[in-house]
Length: 210
Image 1 (cartoon, rainbow, N blue to C red):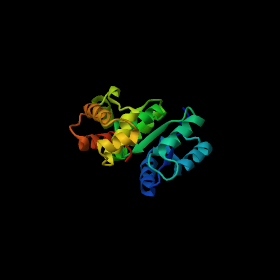
Image 2: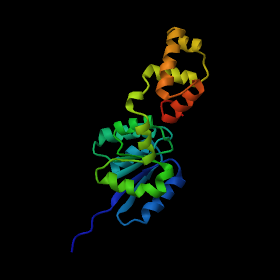
Image 3: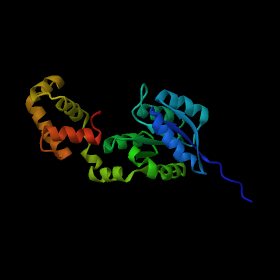
Image 4: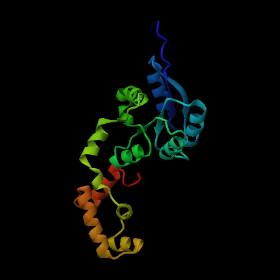
């Protein structure tokens, strides 16, 4: 008789107890997946990961102190083989790409936890990358070539704050004409017709912090 495989041990990192409880209940009904621990902050996530060595870590992005992005980088730096699935409300392709480049094995919206989390855990544990369909569609819609430069992101942050072209020019030490040209290029990249639409799109895609 073949020996039973050990369950996939999962560490849940989120500062909302209700979400942790929901995930715990979902995992608890599975024979091949087990909850090995919980954490409510990035710092605690690293500490718990050192102690528990989970097979898969579920990581929220917005948490007090060390956020999920920095916690992911810290865990992957110390444990290069760690498998981390990011759980977030952010649909932006820019945020998703940055996290995947930084070592995340999966990117799942919290709205998809109930229907897709178990599949994501199993696939990531098997060595695959799991990205929710909605995010993959964002990848296809916005090629990497459309990424904004560092200066363009700085300009968009000022636009989102309501600064005029003159104020932006003074803030980054260029002429107002340079700002106008930069904005025209930004509008083209974001497929936006004006400053308001550009700011909304830049925020939605993850170029700007929420």
